[in-house]
Length: 222
Image (tube, rainbow, N blue to C red; front, side, top):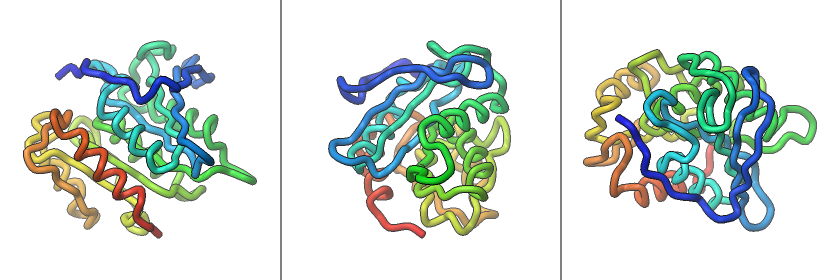
C-alpha cells in the first residue's frame, strides 16, 4: 500500500545531507523551543512502497518528540528522495540509520542523549539499530510504531530496556498483522499498546498516536 499523504512538521524544518555508506543521505531537522534534551532519530516506512521521511506517521513522531523537548531528525533511506544508492532490504538501511546517529548524536565524551523511533519498515530497522547501539551507549527512549516483523525478523528488545520502549500497533492493521507483532513480542514479555480500530497508517487517529507517544516520552524510564 502506498502512503503519499504528507504534511510538514513546521516551517522551520532544516534540510541538509550527510555522507552515508552509499553516498549522500538527505536529512531533516526540527528543533524544540529552548534547550534540546537530546536527539531523536526517526526512520521511515518501506522505500519500495512510497515510504519517505515526509510520511505523515513519521512526521507525527517528530512532532511528538519536538513537543517534549527533543531535536527530531528524520532522514531518507538510500535511494529515496535526495539520498543516493538503492534499496538494500534492511542491511544497508541499518547502516544509513547508524550513520545518521553518528552525525547527529556521536558517541563519546559529551555525547547528547539519544532516542530512536521508527514506523513500519523503519521500526524494523530501528530494532536492529537498537540491538547494535544499546550495548555500547545509553538510549533514553525507543518508539516502535506498526513494526514490520513479517518480511524479515525484527530484533528482540533487551528486557532491561522494556520500560523505555513503546510498541504501538493498530488493531486492524492489514499490512502488518497485530497477531504477528504479538508473536514477536510474546517470547520477550514485551508489552504492546494496541490502538482500537487503528489501521497501519492510523488514518483519523494521528492525534491519538501523538498523544500516546508524548505520554511515553514524558514518563520516567530506567
